Length: 107
Length: 231
Image (cartoon, rainbow over all chains, first blue to last red; front, top):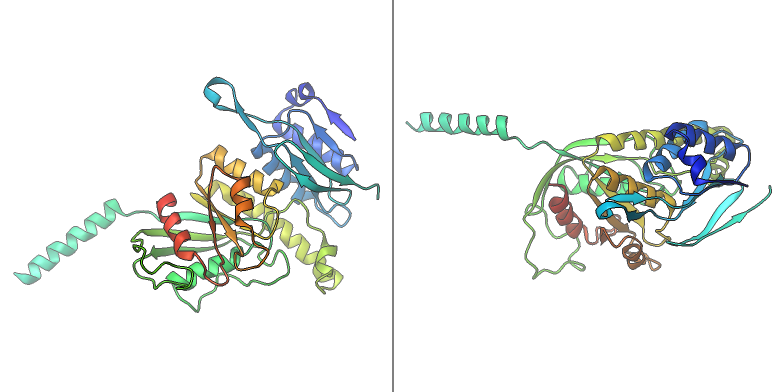
């Protein structure tokens, strides 16, 4: 499991961030991102994943807390935590606004 | 005299149509696999265009739609259709007179995972399952790319399933970020396990219309909401 700090995430460009996450997941890791991914980044991650789906890599399981509004006049969307894992290893059981339950298998 | 008047009126209409023609809005039907997107697209076309024309085929096998299909110039005119299901419509209610011209864009189901082995569980041979999985991944990419060209989204959810999936959250988040209007249709309301209220609770900031695209329940309500939201 890789726990990635918000500082590390913010130091990377958007595409670099997605490549980093997908490479980690394809290596079999569960990647937990402090600060999370935006909805647009998650959509791009799904697109990138679909390009790389193969017989051995069927895709990803992704889950995250929904973003919150904050900042000046509540104009800014503040992302929170996102967890991404290989679909064959991770399965989300329950997802709420502040709770994510997953099963992670070693196979 | 009469002929001259008709010619003048015809010319005026042509000028008006030329300069004030309302472009059809492109409405994407999005959602997870097997939510009933193609059934809904077919229902819209059967009602407003031709009851023998199908946009696509619906089956129980996921990812049956693997290419985006666009059916242009669909005129939704609520005054022109009979009540679709008199048992679920209030005959005393004032009829909605809204009109809307749209292009219906039926999209492949969005998913984060496509495993060819899942198709084999539906009786497909390995080679066929792998081909279908490959096409399904391309379909997901195509559906995502279409988001750049869409004016509004009909997000279809299966009301018998937990709606709070990351795919649904991501679609809604993207629409909100792009300021594209969204209507959520809670499909399969005819099934005993249907719970549209779960969808309303999960996404309280959006309009949720319970429907059955298969049986035609509540379609008038959905068309009315579409005409209001996407005009």
